[in-house]
Image (cartoon, rainbow, N blue to C red):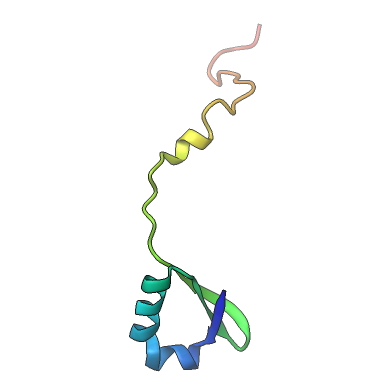
Length: 68
């Protein structure tokens, strides 16, 4: 991944946005050498996020029923 400082990013923002769009490669924005932001192409989520949880409940105790 390519990294660039905030001070270098600011005057070239539109140019860098177009570059990310064209190449599809993310860009890391740093502040004093520490990564703070990631710019990457938008990828719409095509699956339902709850599908990842489907079937993951191992035990369910109904909260309103009294134990026997």
